[in-house]
Length: 375
Image 1 (tube, one colour):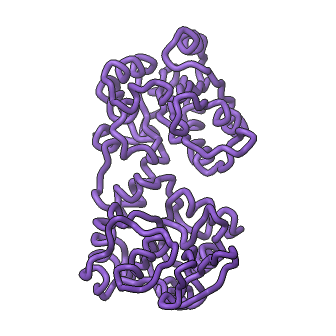
Image 2 (image 1 turned 120 degrees about the vertical axis):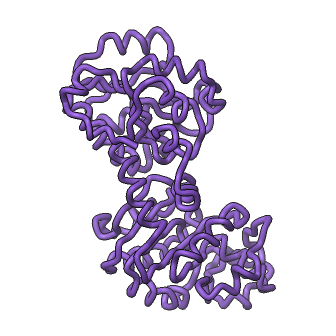
């Protein structure tokens, strides 16, 4: 897998370069980008191409509805680079904008998923997109687990490279697949049935794996403990996982009662009306030594119900990790968002991945459709 920054300015000057960006970002109530993390991470590749005199055409998707637009993304990018937004994808407006480009110009075309052929990995659609460029750069690690036209189709038709962010993601996650010991992994989120293979993989490679978030509810349920109104997965952990000496789960929980008041309880004290929404202080004390002693820390998923505002213990973990001298890899959209709200300096937290599902799939499989397409 070659990276675009292996090419010189003379290789890039005047060339039309398609960049598949990972700019699927949340919007606020005013329709503006609510979290700039992915926007900021996209800048190094785009700036490198601009400085090299390339004519850069960004392709990206946003949201799940075809009518959603990349206009807010363009507005956010303009704080970093002179990006021109074109509210068109394959039509005359997009073609005219391309023809008017000069060296160093950057265009952002419309939402890829405004055309259903993107997610269908339609070959004619991929070929039409490829016709916009002389070469292709995938910098959308966050979408690299999707076999979509802009991810795996375009590289069949023009020379393809990894972007700077994409390359860094693969390099850092490779280290996380074979961590230095002692190592400590924290895995949150929901849907145990989708996380079970990864948990088993981590248990073989990490000295300790702490399962939190809604996944911990499944652990309590599997142990026969009360879980009240808490979110439970379709599949529960096996006895093999529960009894693994490397496996850790919370020893206390924060529950939201029917009156919406929060209380800390032991797992065996959860009432029928309680909803488990986070860990508690004893759980933090339990894992603190593992964080302190670790030489490698992997973290994906907040400890609590992020959308419900239960982020205090996630913040506390971020503060502990920031004090550690370990190598660190942290990912998951809610995890990053919660960390940003904590005020902990990003520079003290190691590598922050833009991947959510892509990060988890890469940790398990060691490759993704988007990586295979570049090879």
